[in-house]
Length: 143
Image 1 (cartoon, helix red, strand yellow):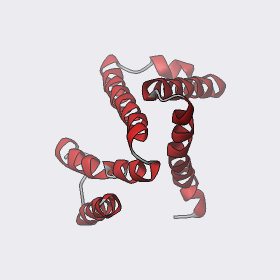
Image 2 (spheres, rainbow, N blue to C red):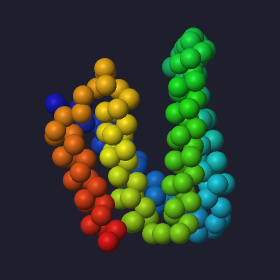
Image 3 (tube, rainbow, N blue to C red):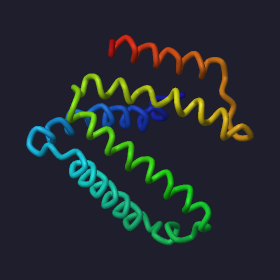
């Protein structure tokens, strides 16, 4: 693995770690988490559409089978509920607590992937140990 392979994950980490701080700044002025989540999701939609327009991939948006779109739509609903919950959490507890609590998401992902993606993914012992370590870290931070 080279540094070039790590650019996107590191950029994602930077963006995800900056997000709670920006949410807190916004909620200082407007204590409306649903409005903040809506503005954030709208900005994301504009960015995605801009990417598809500029990269010439607009046709790929409409070329997928309907059943695939259902999976993506359900994923979008889950993401929207997650974003709203993330914003709402910042209304009640500090960002320094919200971030590690939501970092427990891998525990749920590992469990769900083990039961739903059996033919495609295998959860290794290292995956399970790493996930348990994440959860223990969250417990230590919150307690």
